[in-house]
Length: 294
Length: 307
Image (tube, rainbow over all chains, first blue to last red; front, side):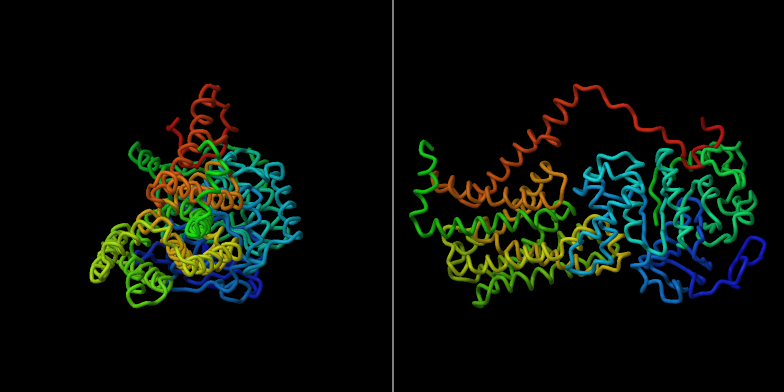
């Protein structure tokens, strides 16, 4: 096993690579600046992986590398035994809200329909089957009544659900969600957690990049902790520890009280990173306002 | 304008006005449709640059007796590539690269055309258009180029849509985003050639931007934006042509002024996104209640001591 976990123990069963998303010693660099290195993971069908780490730590970069749109300088990514770059149509991606042009003249239905494009291929127009499927997934995320609304007129949570619907419409084997929990309402939070759970039952692979440790601990089986390199990868009970989170975020971590808004009790208590000193606070606030660079 | 029918029908007794009418309708419809992509992707500066950069191509083709479409196309592709290559040097920003390339190529065009015998007349007709001098061959070429551009917009609707709206998703889907971008630049180049006779090289960018910007204020759907933009472009062409005929003023400038006036009117009075609707009327209403409370902030924000 090349997999790295916090205490060196491997995952339960040796995974069959034909059934896995396998990342082998991945290094990504923009120009000559290395933004992420030494990422290795074997992710089986039905696993939900939380990708956590500080802003600029490479969470988005890892998702983009899997999608084949970040400059991978070494290492390999395979999905079900084939190079990931040849399997793009089997992967669905929900971008960060900040990178979307919300003034673009498209409706919720148009956005969800884009999920049907990879299967349709060149020149072909979406047919009645595609429209039925789009209507179904819009109903699934509670957005059917807003299908004719231009996306800029929606609330943050509704916007996120429109893009989740697009990913579902693709019927992909791998679902990549980039910060889906940022700036959304509780109802949308539930819908997204529900969708993730459903994808798990369907045997799909879900990667959830988030700096919301609460939702990561609720939804995920494993955590992949990145901070310019992979700090750790492994099951929640090994990686969701104050020591490991401190290593990931580069500072001490304190536990806050229980924030039981998600209703799942079979998970460890949520924790929050703590950066002592006013200076660190100020620094972090600035980081939160800025967009993640990768 | 006491007799509206005669205002339109009288000029059409002349062959050159009938030809000009067909030409401006073609020009308006095609620039309107392509302009939607120029506006939505923020390419107006690139559109302006392209129109200048293909100028030497047109002059060369004209001097050598070849098709000006071919000349424009070759220079359009060369310029697009040139801008991409120069901007790859990180010391030169993309807008500087565009500025360098388009001014340089435009100067080359002026130097080339200055060596011809009818320097002033030729230059003026390229720069400002000469729609009344349009020939049947010109119309035929415009129709073919326009048909190719419109066919591409229809055939590649979903590819161009997702590349414009969500580049990352388009790349993730494995679409050849680089080639689609280049194709769009070629389509813009072809459109510029279609507009050359009607409004000339300098004012083409107005026809690429103004009708589409007006259409954006009137609709929130891509297909209707393309249709409306084409309609506004064609209507500007027709109205501008007739006004210029009756008042004996430059057709190209009048066409662009009509398009600008339509934009001004729409900007003020568009039902949902117009100035009157958004500022004057809606401003009086009480602001809407804030959306559902955000429960999950980022953990960094929830750090104790911050609240």
